[in-house]
Image 1 (tube, one colour):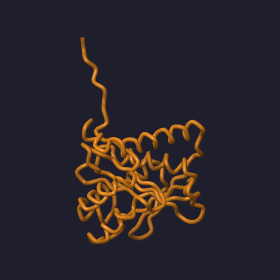
Image 2 (cartoon, one colour):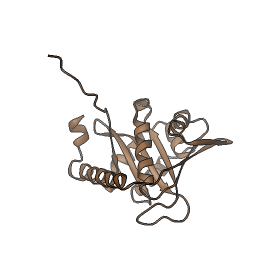
Image 3 (cartoon, rainbow, N blue to C red):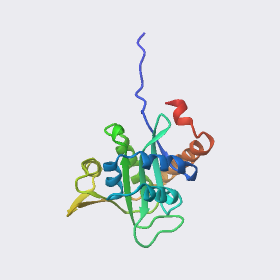
Image 4 (cartoon, rainbow, N blue to C red):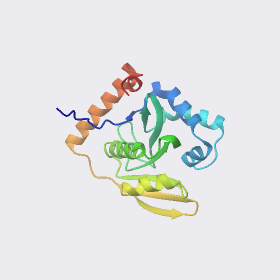
Length: 197
């Protein structure tokens, strides 16, 4: 009798919470200089990275991480743009930022993070999701184009915009279940990704 093998994702994507602060700091400090410059749209010192990481999880918006063997290897952020943000929504426009450690690229992590950010934005009242990157950031440009973002180059930067569909009752329900599961993983089983990978 043949044994069927199911394809299992090599990474786990979940929402990040304040308990993940040290993982976020370690992640940003591990980024090579080029990846760090691409993520922050320019060179950032270690002190700047530490200051950013200290407030990143408590700033308005949400963050998602991709874990491989229990280590944070990819990160996506969703932040409101302009007026309209509230404790219950981000307003009609939001910006997403992404970074995946170089050794973990081309494994579907960026695509999974983008899909999760787009879903989160949709359920937080965002109609137009924006991404901005350096024009030489090929991985980010390909990722944005793959997800249907209209790209427009302006000098050394490129901006992409993606119009999101309205949420449905089922999609809102699904998002609430996913968020509760993410919270449970982060707080109750902080090493679950490492143990099950």
